[in-house]
Amino acid sequence: MDKRDLDPTALVIVKETNTINFNEKIESMRSFARENGVPIIKDEGLVFLKNIIGLKRPMNILEIGTAIGYSALMMNSVCNSNIYTIERDEKMYNEATKNINELGVKNINIIYKDALEAFDLIKDIKFDLIFIDAAKAQYKKFFDIYTPLLNENGVVVCDNMLFHGVVVHEENYDNLTKGLRGLVRKLHAFTKELMENDKYDTTLYDIGDGISVSILK
Ligand code: SAH
Ligand code: MG
Image (cartoon, rainbow, N blue to C red; front, side, top):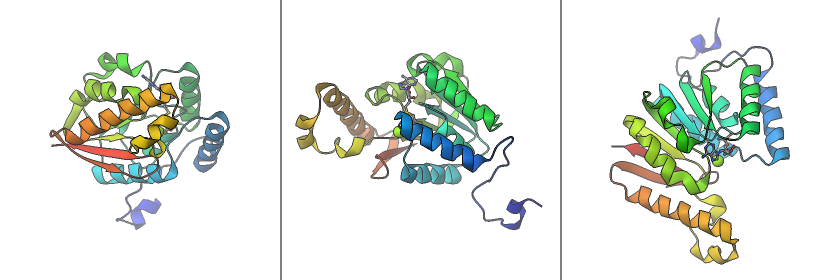
């Protein structure tokens, strides 16, 4: 008997995976990320994201920024959604493809393209959850391009919104390199605009690296 049958209150769907042990694979992906400086979602943020998925039960999820497929696989571990995830970096795309195939996961679709140019590939799909986690300076563009595909009451989640705490503290700006300062300014402007956008109810959470949740009214 499936364990789930015994606990009707269980939110988390523990899936069987093929070939290799899921936990071992995830652990090796975490090591890979650490060793190669891949900014995968922080533990706290991941728990939060999984909770949102458990409550929202999205049918289709769009992720912008696959990296090695870590967050996509973790999202997939708690839902039966179709996950579409976009990655522009060839090495990352290959690594994610390998990881997802090794686990025999079928419902994660990786799109190898710059997210600024991938709209046409998914324009006929409606999403219940959009997770934005790619180039921070482009968050506004990603938001503007992809939120027309959001279902009523759909949710947009953005990661790294507090960018290690520098975004909210303007007095920290002088300590940053010029490039980083520009990026932080853009992220700050996006955050402000998002908070003021009355089509959405937005809350910015001090979780992980800062996560915003915007619910389309
Ligand atoms: N979501 C992942 C981490 C993503 S890191 C996780 O938590 O496991 C950000 C990724 O976004 C990087 O791999 C980078 O190559 C990718 N990226 C950045 N800008 C992008 C763009 N415009 N289009 C597609 N991918 C992008
Ligand atoms: Mg992130």
